[in-house]
Length: 119
Ligand SMILES: [Zn+2]
Image (tube, rainbow, N blue to C red):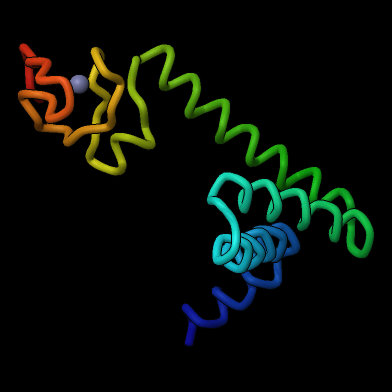
């Protein structure tokens, strides 16, 4: 019950509700549209709805959170040369053909580039 009441408290946070809206719109939009377009439709749609009907400061806070995460991922990518999104998927990018391949692959299945080091 403790967990449930904490979860309900969390869901009642306006910023969490904003992200839930984005997620729901994204899921509905991705049925009909390409993933990238759905992302923009959901984020812009939720922001528009929030600015019109709810507290615009919440939408602003949510975008600050999104941009911080985005900047964090980019910094890790360029400072440590590590792509977090690919790492989470267990993939890496071939330096020759730029295809996404398995993280432990020793030979690229697309261009047959050999990797010296597999970690
Ligand atoms: Zn390749």
